[in-house]
Image 1 (cartoon, rainbow, N blue to C red):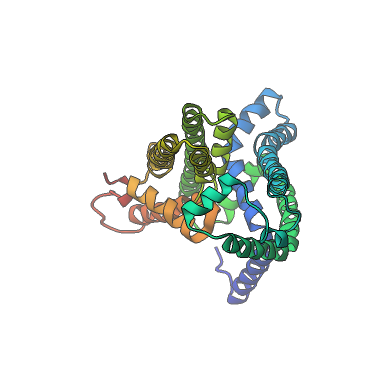
Image 2 (cartoon, helix red, strand yellow):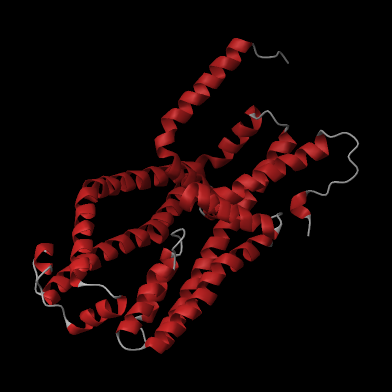
Length: 352
């Protein structure tokens, strides 16, 4: 086989760079599409067989399921939070008897709110200054928020289109990648299988942890006397994907509401329970769930999750384990196929 010339290699690298440059603005929806397609590929194959080989219809149905079961609930959550925020602000204005922040300086605060300020050692003047700054920040960020909403809709459409075509033509794409890969066919298949396995394990671990957190949090809300405990448990499961704060976005305000309502014992019990059980499920349960499906040490899984979150934000939950798995797979291939005279094949991911 003839070796490619330097000019051809330069043009190949140039074309690859230009392709990446064009696709870079849509990196997040395209990455999510690849992840979703990898998780649903087997289910799409079974549905295709049930439909008599109609792959296009099967992929369209699976894409519709992604829209209804994943995209729509998150869209409904954003709509609910936005609507409730508007209602809450209107209620706060009516309660305080003010129509603008400037009137807050001389307003007579309700007794419960005044007690909270006394406990926190805050004056009404400090509250006015903080509210004024918050209004300025919101007003300045409003155009960006509207633009972000438009970009989110576009990204969702691109993701769904990519999911459909990847589910429909994924096998052909994998065969093409195997042909053009610089690795041998066996090595490419091994690497592809490892990445698909890690992707599925990570997604299953994330979803299972979210469900567990929602159920446990809902039980805590029920015993603490929080109304609509099932709804807030579902809300806790959905916000568990937010990096850093996650479930505390729900159980934190719930505990504060119990404290303000004159139930400090129940508030402390709920906060302690959620911190130990709900937060602990994410920090401990997720790596343990993934360990049974990924050829990776539990410590490496934990490190990949935390490192991915720190470097890539929410997507790091998926990217971190994939990056570590890619490195370990390449090390295994090198040790097995290229290192002459290697005595054993014990890779660090298989160590106890």
